[in-house]
Amino acid sequence: MSTTATVVTLVAAFMAGFSGASIFFGAKFTVEPLAAYGVPRNWWNRLGAAKVAGAVGLVVGLFVPAVGIAAAIGLVLYFTGAVITVLRARAYAHVAFPMIYAAPAVAVLALV
Image (cartoon, rainbow, N blue to C red; front, side, top):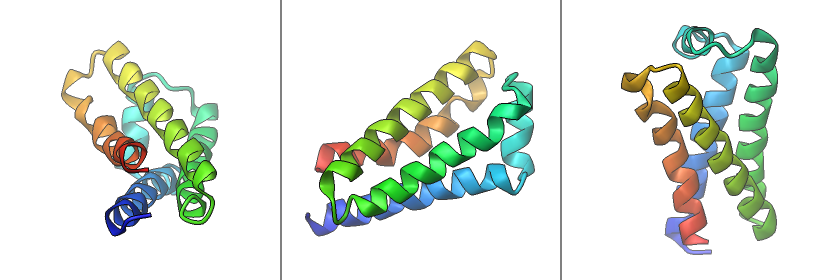
């Protein structure tokens, strides 16, 4: 794996892990929009766990490439769902945020 791919993978893992942890810690900048978008409260922990699992999968993917590819695909699908959720909530000004988190996962797929 190239140095660029390694750095992008670690950035993607950090961003996904941070995003997942922000749900677990109840960060206002994360949970208030979830509530506003109509995401049920009982889904939040599972959504956070999915992001953290994706982050761990990306790091493991540095050593087992198939796991990293699967994790990147999972994160891209997750954040695609997040974009759809934001659009369905008509919060058009917020649509960039899930796209920002999806971009490094897409880049990982492009570099691997």
